[in-house]
Image (cartoon, rainbow, N blue to C red; front, side):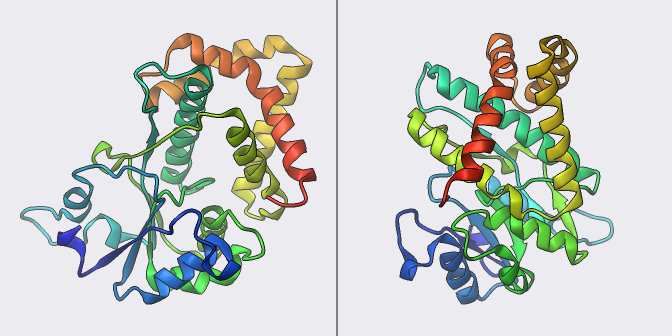
Length: 270
């Protein structure tokens, strides 16, 4: 990150560190407060950044009118992610997660490009330091996770500029869970935050997804309409996902989503 070190600080909160008993959000606040740059690049400690990410991010046009580098043109820059297994032959659980993650990532990109961002991930995200610190009270410190989604809501509510990149050169790699218990724990934690969301785009998107999946449970033939849309999103982001895996995900997703939603809402802690 040498080329950007004068303008941007990479912030990586370590998993498993109790940070004075206050969790990841407090760790982020401490690290970002200590940064001496205008921007912070947030990543998870288990993410593999793209080898050329730094040079691509800081690149400026050659010739013509000078302009800011990619991250300097926004208050919040959503960077792309791709899920890959460490195994040569991923398990069924891993393949399903990879397909789901591709759809989520493409939905993230498409909605952000249209000015109605509904998702972002703190695993690969750049924010203007001062703007992040101003948003800290909106991050619901009482909830251990959700720093990224609540940050997105805060930035949108305050009318700040949000941009997104589709660049493969900026795509970081995340790993799927290899155990069902960790998978369910994470999904229910995600679902448990849903009642705290207030952004109309996020709520509208969530309602559409919920209604579409309830309709599929009640009328399985709806799969014929729903699957091509989902498959298009998946393949647009990750061409490695097979047709069979995508179809299986589409068949089981309504049940899995409802289980996560109900389980997440009734968990005392997430």
